[in-house]
Image (cartoon, rainbow, N blue to C red; front, side, top):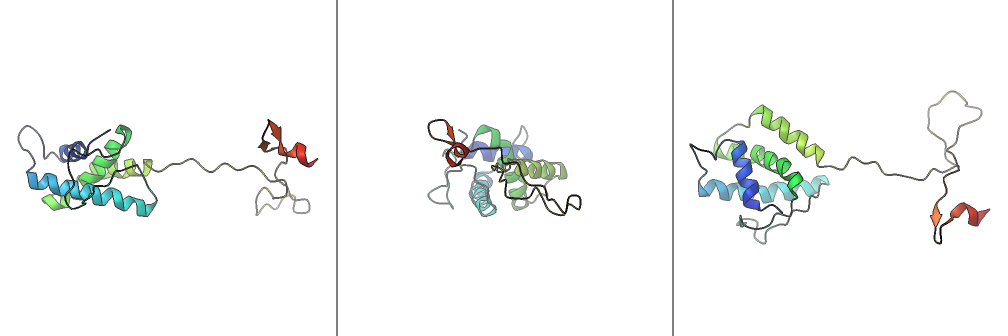
Length: 157
């Protein structure tokens, strides 16, 4: 697991605040820790939950706390945190970083459509002018499995 301090450090690295010549002040680190809490918790309002562990006191989070974020999502969270908090340190986010943050944020959402069993009593679609006299229906050959390796169609025939 990744700590909240590591995410903040990565975000500040993306903004070139931490490096060989400069380092972030303790005030900047605490600001970005608060921004991390606010940003990720606001994502739940948009239907995104990434397993973030909220601090007991949001105004004073601890950098050594586990974030609950997996390593695969760290770049997305850190780049969005960098964009989210850069105005507070008097910077404009670079356009390339904004693009990276947006693409990474969109990738956090699951893109798998819901799988459904076809219904032979429902039409294939709407608006089809061909076959208006004989509408096309979904295939009725997909049976649902029931216990003991049977199929639901076997029980109703």
